[in-house]
Amino acid sequence: MIKSFKHKGLQKLFENDDPSGVQAKDVERIKIRLLMLDEATTTEDFRAYPGFKFHPLKGDNKNLYAITVRANWRITFEFIDGDAYILNLEDYH
Image (cartoon, rainbow, N blue to C red; front, side, top):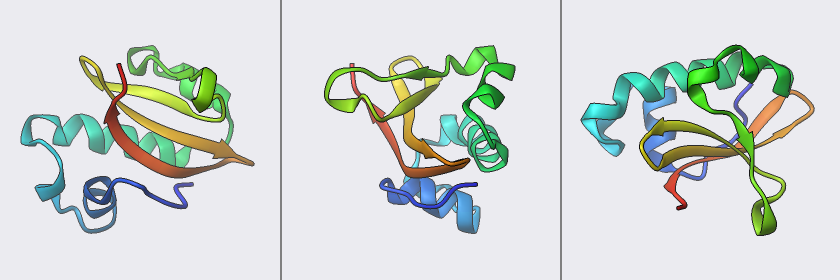
């Protein structure tokens, strides 16, 4: 279950179906990923979607995971005890 957001655009899209805070071309892709994040209970659930390229981050971000939206754009998040926290949309490459 999604518990918190860092990116206000993701939050508006998830909570109010308001796409104004994200790029129009990514809205549907992001919605699908947010639904999956909200339903996931373990990190193994993400492996059912190989196109999302789920992976843990390294270095300073070693407590974070990422899934691909498009090109270099990722949704990054912490996943603790079956819940997703601090969702962000970023190009960290």
